[in-house]
Length: 422
Length: 106
Image (cartoon, rainbow over all chains, first blue to last red):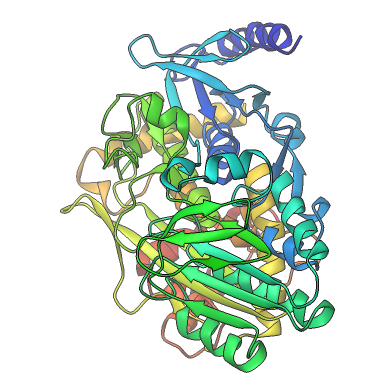
C-alpha cells in the first residue's frame, strides 16, 4: 500500500520535474535520505527548501513518529511525558513535499545508486544522505545482549519505548534502592547525557524516595562534559545520594543478580541498571562499508559531508567521524543536515559549494526539573586542513545553573523540533 | 515563478563565484545556508514557535541585528549563550546573517 502510493507519487514528481525544466537541475533529480532523526529530517526539509522545492526528496524512516533524545531524560525524571518529546513526520510531507516512506533500508548499491528497503522496493537516487544514528555494541559487554532483549537491563539511549520503561523501573524501585548508570569511553552519543540522566534520577529520588542512591559509573577518567558544573550541583543538592565513580569499564553484566563486572575492580550490584555500551555508526552504514574509521565511524569530506568511501553518499549526524572538539549531539546533527543539504543542492544544480561553512552547537542539560546548564561551540571550516576548528575565545559553558536557561532550553527544544520537522 | 527567478539569480551568482568575487559575494544559496545555522534555536526562516523566549529573527532590521551581534561579540551586551557563539563568527558571516533575516517577512 505504502509502496504503491509512493510509486504513484514518483509519477507526480516526474510531471513536476517536466514543468520545472527551465532550470539547471537534471530532470527528476532525487535525493534519498535514510533516517529521520535530527540529521536526516533536517537534511530532507532543507534540500526541499534550498532547492526552492525543485529537487524530489524521499525520506526513509522506520518509526511512525520522531521521539527526541534531548529532553527524554526529563521523562525519566518525571517532569515531562513521552507525548512532550514525540512529533509526527506529517509536516515534512504536508508543508515541504518530502515523501516519507515508513520502512528501513536493507541495502545500498553505490554503483547503481539505489537503496533497497525491507519491503522489497528499490529506490533510485542522485544523491543519498545517510543519517543512521548510532548502533549500540551490546556484544562488547558479556551478558548484555540477552539482558537487553529481555527488557531487564535498559539503554534508553535511543529515545522511545525504553525511555518510558526506564522511568517505570525507577518508579517500581523501593526507597533505599540503588540506580546505576554506566558510561562508555568517549566518543559516544550526547557527552553530557548520562550525567543529566543521573541528575534527573536524583531529582526524582529526592522527592519520592530519599533513601535511594544514584551511582554514575564512568569508563572515562572524569566527567566528559560540563564536569565542574555537574559535580558542584551534585555536591550541593544531591549530597550522599549521587556517587561518581570514574575509570570503571564494564566488562560483563549478570542479569540474575543485577551485578556489573569490571575489567579491574570489584563487582557492583544495583536495583536498576542502565548500561550504555560502546557505540558506532548505525548498522546500515557499517553494512555498506562506510564506517571506514576504526570500523566504527564514517569518514567524510567535511566541506560537503560526502563519504570518503563512496561518491554521492553523504553522511550526517552521530555516525560520522567527528572533527576535533565536535560533540555527537542533536543540535550538531541538525547543523550537519543543513551544510550537507546546501552542498547537495549546489552540486545537483551546478553551483559552487559554500567554501566557508560553519557549524554551531548549543547543548542544554537539566540538573533538576527547572535549572539548566549549557555548553556552546562554533566550528569554522578550515580549507587548509580540510576540517572544522573551534574559534579561539568562542564557545563555553554556563557560569552556574539557572532557571532562565531552563526556559531557553525548553524553547530550544520546541524550536529545533519545528526546524527539523515542521 | 518565484523559484525560477531565484535560480536564475543563483546561476548569475555562481558565474560570479568562479571569479574573483568568490570570497566577497556569497551566492543566494550560501546566504540561505549560512543563515540557517541560526534556525536551530531561532526557528526556520527566523520564525520561532509561539511563546518562545528565544527571539524571532525574521524581519529584524539589518543594522539593529549587526549592532546586537557586535555587542554580544565584544561583551558589551550580556547573554547566556550568544556572547559565546558570536565570538566564533566572522564579521562577514554576521553581516550575511543580518542581511538575510532583514529580508524575510516577519
